[in-house]
Length: 326
Image (cartoon, rainbow, N blue to C red; front, top):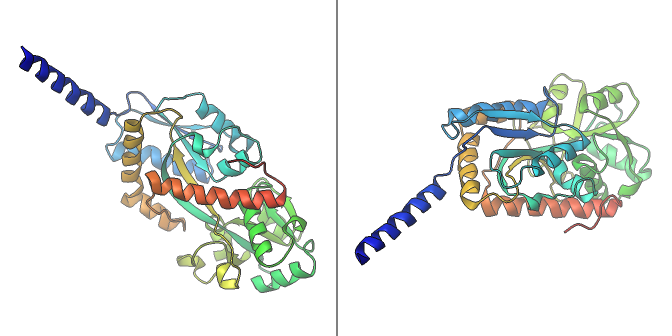
């Protein structure tokens, strides 16, 4: 009798452990995007939508849900409505940091589990092809003479590109608060304004600006990356090569789970996303689009995000654009 009871308990424990370890989606999965259909983030999400079933990680439908607005505030709020439901994945950008720091969203990146780093891009300093500013040194010399003499475009005040501009200015001995910042809705609009002479420089995604560089429309003076980028941007120097001792802020893309999901559900998504992001199709897409992705997950990913957040907070506090968030 005792033996029977013990065996029943053991089998029950094993079944419970197997169920916990073997969690898998039981209904459609939503990839929640902070941007409208048709943009770069949407393209990435559609690739994720394709790769998750192809890698045999997910057997239920995968949907891309565009929740644009509020510079990511709308998507974060929608995701928060599905607490403890592992079928809702938030595709977030580095604006997740800056929105929270500026008080635009109550939820921060530590409130939800980080599952995978999709890829990283870096901000670059650009001028029109016919600009008299030929080098990054020329740009710094002009700023040291008068910080307000150059109008810089960014896509959001207090966003990553604005923070990168402030980091470079501070490292060069220029008052970052005096930089003339002009906000445009898209990088394409900013480039058009720059080529039309309405602004003197742009700070934007290096990867997104590569076609304009290749076509000879803009000149990329420097890139805020840890080392030079391969391919078409290999001749563009980094800020460090320009003698600026400055922390590197990436324009990252990452996937987060819903608040309150279980360790087994977190583990499932870490494994599933890692398989997809290490696949040949994803690697080919990254190469084609001049981005990279260190394979970070778990504690390593948490440390990476913590370091990026702390750098961002320091800069935005100096600019007077952030609340002192932990």
